[in-house]
Image 1 (tube, rainbow, N blue to C red):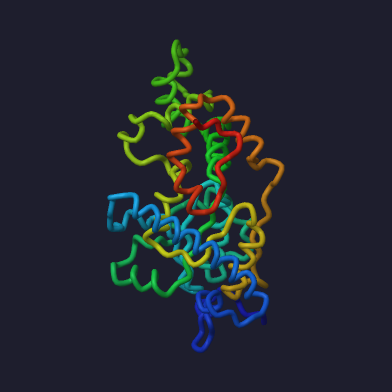
Image 2 (cartoon, one colour):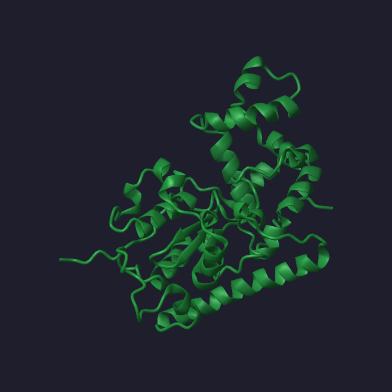
Length: 312
């Protein structure tokens, strides 16, 4: 009988090496080269955080609410900070397989709406302070990031151009239309289903939006969602190398033969060319403001300033 690789004793039996140990002290030669790559990504984050702390007077201590995006896998000693529009649904599916203790075996058998139910995954803010600190110290912490403007345009396309996202149209679209569209129709004011990207950009650039409270997680910065200058992430995966980075992480956790990260539909993904087209329809002032808003993400994760920006 084949043993379930996701059982309570499936990863971290006495005497075995966990993912954190494999990353920093690889026992297999195939891990060594990738370990160097991820060290360079960690160094980039560290250097950017140091530069940011020197230029900013802001100092803060993390609260439990800051940890609500960190999903906990006890069996494989992993902490995953999920970032919407960066393969987030599929990563949650994988985490459900890893934490399900045999309940699930194929991530793609899990409906997307189930992957987003908070009851199906445990997050770090649900633990005591002592247990939080223990996991931050001893578990492998990882996140996946994406070119900031591709992620932003992807969020706009998903939340404001698809009919099934009526809840976002009602919650944000109506507000955006009311504030930024002259002579809006009664239907647009009621349903908010036809928000244009230039209106969305105006909403992001408006100081009033910041006073309303934190941005929605789908267009909030990774800096604010995952706090990489306060939490030392061991592995920074990238959307651009999603398959390789996800495979590496799963092999570190010892489950690479049992679960594969789902392939994604490249035909529908937001590209740099698409982002350029959308940004070409907004003003130079809006471009500059939005770049300042996401600048820290560009610096932290080594993304170049887009060539299509018209910054003075």
